[in-house]
Amino acid sequence: MTRTAELAPPAAGKTRPTRGQARRGQAQLRRILTGALGLIVLAALWELYKLLGPADGVVVGGTTLLPRTSDLAMPHLWVMAERVLEPVTGAAAALPLWLVVLQGSMFTLGIAAVGWLVGVTVGLLLALLMQRFRLAESAVLPWIVLSQTVPLIALAPLVRRWGSQIEVGNFSWESWMSVALIASYLAFFPVSVGALRGLSSPDANHVDLMHCYAAGWWTTLWRLRLPASVGYLLPALRLAAASAVIGTVVAEVSIGLRGGIGRLIVEYAGAAGGDPGKPWAPIFGSIAVGLLAAGFVGLIGLFLRRFRRGEVAA
Image (cartoon, rainbow, N blue to C red):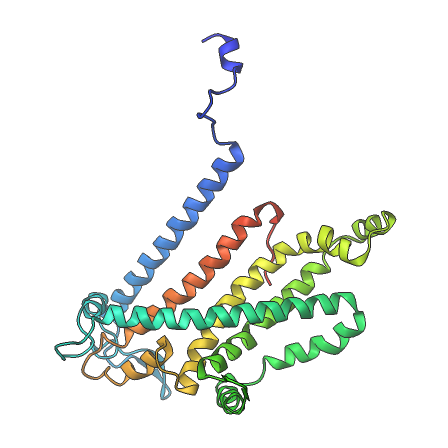
C-alpha cells in the first residue's frame, strides 16, 4: 500500500471511531462486566454462607451478628427464582408472582418519578436562591440540613392527614400524592446541596471575565455556572433518584397505600413462615425500581456528556 493510500480519508459510510470513542466504549464495557461480576460474587457469597454458616446464625452476647441459614430464614437463590414463576396464591385465577410484583413496581416507580421531579425542581430553585443571595444561603442552608433529621416514618402519617383536608373545587388530595410529597422531601436535599456546590464552582477569574464582558447574572448563570455545575449535579440527581425510591417505599408502608411494592413487602413478609421464597420477590422488585431510576439519570448524563469534565461526589 502506498503512502498516498494510507493518508487517504476513509470512504463514505466507513468512518472509524475516534480514539476517545473507543476508550469510552471500553470503559462502558468494563463497567457492565464489573457490575455483572459483582452480582455473581454476591450470589456466590450468599450460597457459601448458607452452606457453611450455623443454622442459628452467629450470636455474641445475645446480639445476632450474622443471620440464620435455615431454609425459612435464608432460602436458596433457585428457590426464590422458582417462586417468582408460580402463582401468588393457590387460587385458580391467581396471577403469577412476577406479574404482581411488576405491576407494583411500576406503580411505585410512577410515584417516585413524580416525587423526583418535584424534589429536583425545589432543590434547583433553592440552590439558585442561595447562590444569588449570600444571606439566603446563611438563612436557608441550615434548615435544609435540619430537615433531613426528621424521622420519615413519623412524618408520613402527618402528611397524609394534612393532605386529606385539602379540597379545592373538584380537586381532592389523594393518598398517592402524600407518598410523592414524601419522596420529594428526600429528593430535594442532595439536589439543593449538589447544585449549590456546582453553581459556586467556577473560578473567580472566569466570573471576573464575564463581568468584564458586562454579562449580567442570568447570562453568567446560563453560560458559565450551569455548565460548570453538571459534574456536581449528575451525582446529586442519582442520589435523589435513589432517595425518591426509598421514600416512596417507606411512605407506602407507613401510610398503607395499596398497589405499590412497599405494601407487597409488608403483605408477603407474613407468608415467610410457610413460603420463604415469596417475600423476596417484592424486595428484588424494589431493587429493580432503584436501578431503573438510576439508569434514567444515566441517560440524562449522555445528553450532557460534553459538560462532564469530571464528576464529583455530591
